[in-house]
Length: 157
Image (cartoon, rainbow, N blue to C red; front, side, top):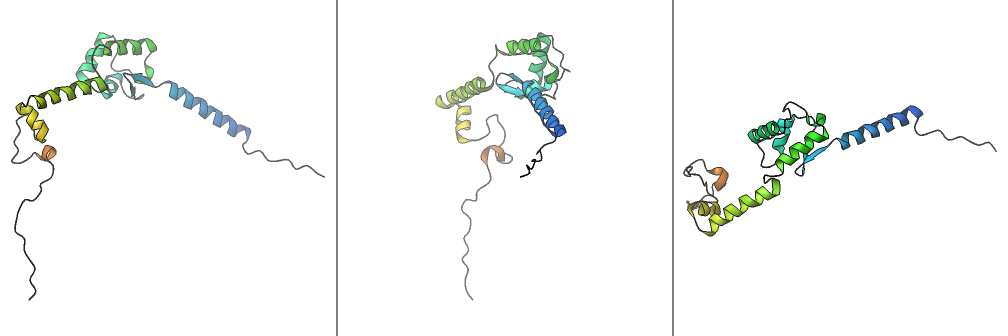
């Protein structure tokens, strides 16, 4: 009885290509920079990437980068570990992300509890900062709903 040799599913070159793709994927995964619980995009400049963190705008990211002596033109993937540690240390003393959202929520709740004008506007879902409401308040008020009006009955003739 003759033995039939099974054809390999992958050629040697295909296996090499798959392995190199795995290595490239692993290298990409390891280069993810996470600061304050937020993964920063690799291909953006660090000056812009820091604004992905809730509580850090463009001006504050520029101030942080000047404090830490890091160039704002560097891409996130080009940062060294020491630079990342300096940036995260500079960000550690300010409230960010969930902590900041909690502070804002508590401030609004305090305004509602003391029944201030601003608190009542928050509670009613109306503009808080003095904008007009006769027109152009659709974002806060929602769509118009018809109130009253004539109801016409169809009559057969």
